[in-house]
Picture (cartoon, rainbow, N blue to C red):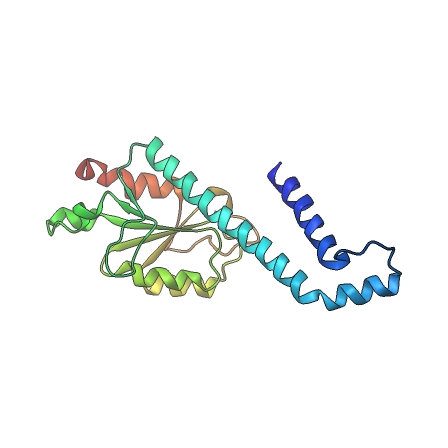
Length: 196
């Protein structure tokens, strides 16, 4: 429903940009000339629409992860400032636990969520510090060399099961790539008693 609403809204804005307050019929030549003249405004409108969609998708992805963690009764804190300008998406189980200085603090981890990666995965390296970092994504277009680079800096990828063996991805057989199921079974579950 929202997509349909947004499409109609953008169509109206495009018509207003091109036709303006024209009260007379435009010839095809005038319409094309006006379309070309207004191309920068049209481009800005389309860029804005694209950025809004990506932002909404990112927030939605974070909310889904938050719901999964809450539903699984996994302790976490969301968007906690760990150091100057470092605000990871999720800390498991909490900042106090990870910063306690106790031996068990090493079981804590950072879970960062990005719907698409491109070069944005490099941002998480700053968040990582000495902590374990897991980066979850639904991106189907990560090159094998990027996955290898992430492994080199200690970033573990967490992906939906459907992406692991998909023909279009390069996730299969990578030591630093886990499905959500493996992440829960092999990373979360063994530490849950310590975290609680």
